[in-house]
Image (cartoon, rainbow, N blue to C red; front, side, top):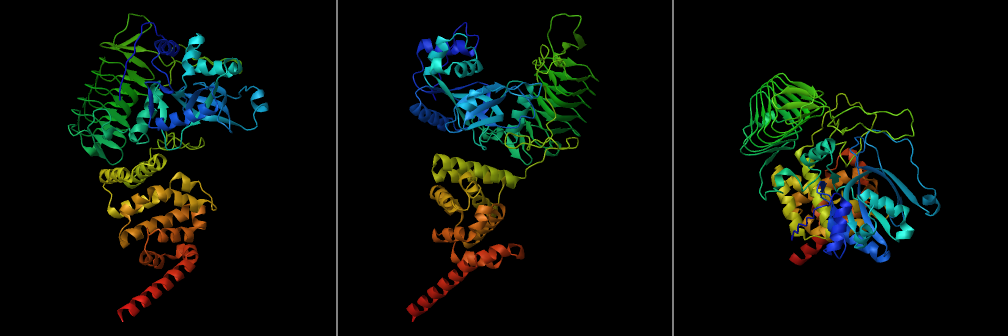
Amino acid sequence: MNVQVIGTEGCRCLGDAIRDLDSKGFIRGHFVLLGANSITNANLKALLEQHKKTAKFDKGAALTVIFKEGNTKFRTGDEVMIAMDVENNRLHFHQRLKIHSKEKKFEIPLEVFVNNSRVALYHNLLDPQIAICSPSLLSLFSDNFDFETRDDFIKGLLINEEILDSRIYVSVLEKNAYARKVGNWLSYQIVSNDIISRWVYPLVPDMGICSLKQNYSFLRNNIYKSANANVSKYQLKENVVIESGTNVDDKTTLSSSVVGKNCKIGKNCILHNVFLEDEITIEDDCKLQYCFVGQNTKIGCKSVLSDGVIIGKNVFLPEKTEKSKCLIQSEILDDEDIEKIGEKAYVINEFEAIQHSDSEDEELKPTKGCIPKMVKIPMLFEDSDYNSSSDGEDESGAVSPVLDDTNIFLSEVIDSLARGYTEQSNPDFLILEINSSRYAYNMTLKEVNYNVVKAIFSLTPIKEADATTVLSSVNLVFSRLGAVVSNYIKTNESMIDGLRALEECFNQQTSLKLKAANIIHYLYDKEYFSEDAILEWHNDLDEECGWLRNSLQKLVEWLNQTSEEESSEEDELQK
């Protein structure tokens, strides 16, 4: 990768930076535009190619905006509502949702529905600040000096698209792709939890993304522990990252937290959803939850910090400090209204209540400095960007469910095969990825055989096919990934493992269930499963799978007949 850093004095917004790039002429083709605080594992190359195809059909295509479907229960300021043409994914309406209120109505121009036969409204999208741009975007910014942000650009083009002869398109990421922007403490907390929970794979702590080496041992329950950290794994409950040089004393427990280098945590402490930078000392009997603590800070014994406390660096808090919902900074000008709570420690009321308006139509405006704070996320996995939880659930006693190693291994195999199918990757590379995951999660060979077959039939082309197209989808998937299956399904025992995985897939998906016999026959013809393995598996089916036994009856009779004929031919040859 060739990195070129361009800096110019006077750039105070995105618009200034784009205009500066245009004047210097560095960019001549289509390009990816994303913020430094955007986190994604999406295939940007594929998105770029998709935009180029759109630009071939529409010379006025200036921008493809990337969105991600996700949980909008916790507003971070990145949530948007859009209206787009289903036929060509062209954007016709864009509105950013308010952080501190729930909109009751939207005003969408009538011509959006009059001029387009099929319009889709999306109100559950996250904007990770990623876009694919045409070269014309540069000149559009240069010609319109009122464009300061990307939202200004989108609004300007939607209002004046006929005058500017430019259009905007939308691409919504697939379910298995991750994308979010870190813009405040709440989004920081959400993204951190998602990374620790491996939703952003391969951007996970144990992959050595930053230092090109593995700094952590990856343990059960999403625990990432440095070899030089002095802490018992029994003190780490779940979803924890511990850096090198950190010491945690006895009877202290950590959960859903990140601890930096050379930290010292005393006895009888409880840390939950806490993010600690380097060189931090926490004395005995402290309780911290939903907070961020800056580097070189010391917190006295028996202190309680909760509910979105943010502490700057070089802060010294005395013992028995109890604070919640506040920003604690170390250096500040003298002010009578500012509370001093310790050496170099002042409380700034950063999280004020919202000033509500009497009118429903008037926009609700937060007071100065009001930003989303860290909160209790009731169900970590259900509230991730991959699922949405029900608002009616009881959140009082909810805890984060922990996926076991087998389920995590299966999800990683599905991710690897899905990426390999889309990119038509070399099967050897996919086998290497699966083997790496196998050793990381200590999977047995039987578990690998079972989950590889289950992952193949969990891929989108097969999962979304109906009964009329499922066989062609299976054929397409195996034409690209069959070599991966053959690498693991070799022996009679491994074939039975794979057939048992198929049995579970049949029970879970109706289209597969209706074509069970055809699928087994196809895999037999392609020599993935042998006659002996199919007959042995069929004989071992329990009573609950009576439907499957009946469905396969004709195939089994044919296989038995074929087997008898082959035996007769062999006997004659021997005579």
